[in-house]
Length: 615
Image 1 (spheres, rainbow, N blue to C red):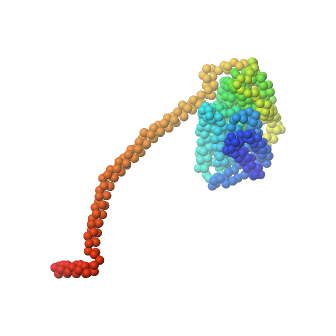
Image 2: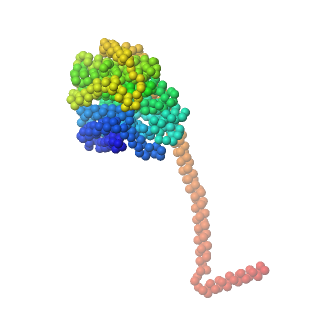
Image 3: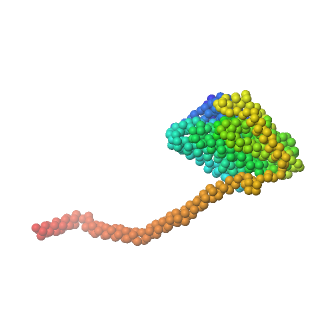
C-alpha cells in the first residue's frame, strides 16, 4: 500500500526532473516518455483511489511527512492524472519538434507530481512542500517561451501575485505552531483555540483565494494566458486553480469553527462568479474569455466550499476540468491554425474544421450549463447546498449561471459565424490532436449521470458526505430554463458588442482594473519604499562607510608618518645604545688570564676603598 502511494507521487516527479535536466538531448524521446509516465500514473491513481493508502515518513521533529488518498483526494488524483494524460497526448501532436520538448514535458510532469503531493497531503508542512513546487513550476511553464519579455513579465506577475497570497499559508502554519506543538494535521486545525483559529483561518483563506484566482487576486490568471495553451489546459482547469477550493474543503471544519471563515469563503466565491462572469462576457479574446470564466466557475466551488456542499464541488470540479481543458486545447489548435485567438478573427473557425468545431460545441454547451450536459446538473447539486444556507447565495449563484450561458454561447456564435476563415500564417490542426479532444468531450457527456442517483449517492458515500442537500426537480427546471433563455438571447444577439455601460464595459474588458489597482496601491508604494531604501543605502550608508574608510586610512597614514617614526627612532636609539654598551663590554674580554687577574685585583681594590670610605 505504501509503495503504491510513494510510486504515485515519485513517478511523475522523478521523470519530470530527469527530462528537465536532460535538456535538448532528450527532446526526441520526451513525448513518449511523458505519455508513458502519465498513463502509468493514471493507473496508479485509480488504484490508489480504490485502496485508500496512507504513508508517513519523518520530516522534522514533531512534523512528519504524511500523505493519504481518501475521499475528496481520491477524486482529485484521478481527475488531475486523467487531464494531464489528455493534455500531454494533445501536446505530442501540437507541440512542434523545434520546441524544447524535454523541458516542456519534464515541467508538466513535475507540476502534475507536485499537484498530487498537494492534494494527498494531510499535514500543513507536507501541503506547503507540494504548494511551493507547484507555484515554481507554474512560473516556469507560463514563461516557457522565456526569450519573449512579455511572456516572462506575465509569468512574473502571476508568480508574485500567488506568492503574495501564499504567505497566508505560512501565517497559518506559524499560528498553528504557536497554538501548540503537533503534526499540524489538516483535520486537527479545527480544534485550535481562539484567537489562533482565526489567524489560521485568515491565512488559509488568503492562500486559497489567491491560488484559485478569486477576487481580488483574479487578475493574475489573465496574465497567465501568455503561457502555451496546453499549460493553460492543465493549470487552469483541473490543477492549480482548483487547489485553493480543495484546500477550503479540506479545512471546512476549521472554517465553521472560526465562526466567520465559511461565510467569507461563500461570499467571495459568489462575488467572483458574478463579477468575473461579467468580465468573461466583455472579452473579445478567446483565451482571456476562458480565463475569466475559469475564475467564475472556480467561484462556484469556493461558494460551495463555504456552505459545505462537498459532493457538489466534486461534481463541478470533474465536469469543469473536462469542459475547460477541452476548450483551452481547442483555443490552442485554432491559434496554431489561424495564428490568432481573437474572436472576431475566428469567425467560422468551427466551420473550417467541423470535427474540432463540434467538439468545441460540446465543451462550450457544457460550460454554459445547458441540460443535459454535466455542468448543468453539477451546478444544481452545488447550488442546493447554497439554497439551504442562504437564499441570497442561491440567487447570486443563479445569476452567475446565467452569465455562464452568455459567455459560452458567445464563443459558439463567433466560431460558427460566417464567413469561413482561411488558414493564414499557421499550420493545419494535426489529426493526432483530435483524439484527446474527443476523449474530453465524451467526459463532458459521461459525467452527467454521476450528478443523479444512484451514482451521486455512491459518490457521496465515497466522499463520506451522505445527507447533504439534493436539488429538487424545480431547481433543475429553473436553472435549465434560465440558461436556455440566456443562451437563446446571446445567440440572437450575435457577434455584436455587448451593450454594457461605458465604465462597466471598460472595467470588465480590463479585468475590473484589479491589476492597475494592485500596482497603484501595493506595487508602486513598495517600489517607492524600495527606491528610498536603496537611496538611503547609497547616499547615507555607503557614504558613511566610505568616509569611515577614508578617515581610517588617513589616521593610519598619520600614525605611520608620526607615531611610527617616533617609535622607530626610540627603538633604533635603544638598539644603538645597546650596541655601544656591548662594544664597551667586549673590550675587557681579551682572553688573557693575567689581564683578567689584573682587572679583578683592580675591581676588588676599588671595592675595598669604597668600603673603607663608607665605614
